[in-house]
Each structure stands twice: as C-alpha cells, then as structure tokens.
Length: 105
Image (tube, rainbow, N blue to C red; front, top):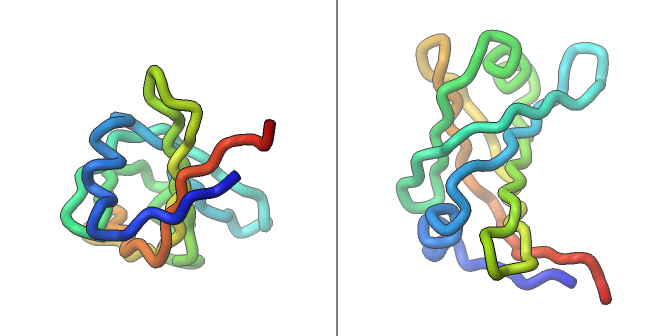
C-alpha cells in the first residue's frame, strides 16, 4: 500500500525517521546502499557521503532514498530524485516524488 507525500511535507516526514538509505548504482550495475542522516530543505535532501557513493551519484544521478518507519508507524518513506555532487563529499538529491509505503496486509 502506498500513500503519496506532497514534496512540501517531505521535511516533516524525514524528521520523523532520522536516517535513511541512499541508493545509487555502481559502474557494474549493482546497487550500493549507505545509511545516512540527511538534512532537508524543501524538496532537497543533502547527504555527507564517501567517495564511492559520490562517484556513483555523479555518473548515474537517478537515485532513491528509503527511510524506515519510525516507532509506532508501519510506513517507510521512499523518495525518488536526481542527485548532484557538491565538492567531493556532499550528494544533493532533488526529490521528484515521495510515497509512504507498507507491505499489503
């Protein structure tokens, strides 16, 4: 089951969760996930990352962020966006869409 999240509500949804997994794709086509605490400004998420994640995001900017449910909620937050790299250690993700998602009963 999925519930759309308006992008102007993204910051509140992220704040409730604290951390998320930034998903990028490597040169070999395999996914790469790192657990990070983003900062959020509107529909923009910023992550401090390592070299591999930055290189993946620069080469293939379509990324996803998955934030697990917070206590008392069964919905994860899934964000799709486009990444850009600032400096060598910051990935900035501009969100295109977001949903709250849980397994079907």
